[in-house]
Length: 121
Image (cartoon, rainbow, N blue to C red; front, side, top):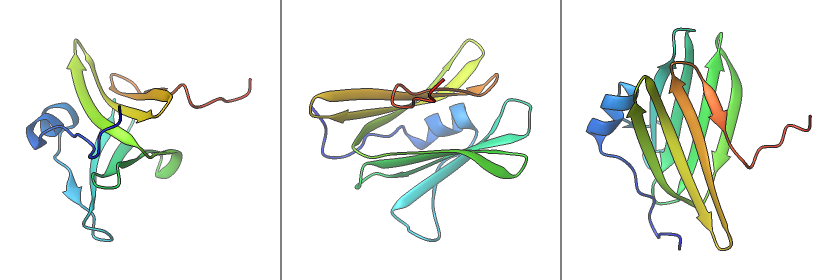
């Protein structure tokens, strides 16, 4: 069952896994944002979220250009993990009759696992 409010990690967990704590954006103080470098390639991943609206936006910039942008609503919680050499973000989405997990590996190299994306190969 979906919760009323999105659950997020504590600031210390953001710092431990992503290297920074989220801060409110200038455009909208209800939206929080945290950025982290990806591996050693110089790419950047940004996670923005609105707790009350239960929405998440995840972007990746490569060579100064945004090449991936994913937006999710009805987010139940954001999880951060660090195990062995891998660090990442998990976004859990739950609506009646549907459950999904967006998983983003930040280190050692970027990897995106999202069952809602179909690239049409």
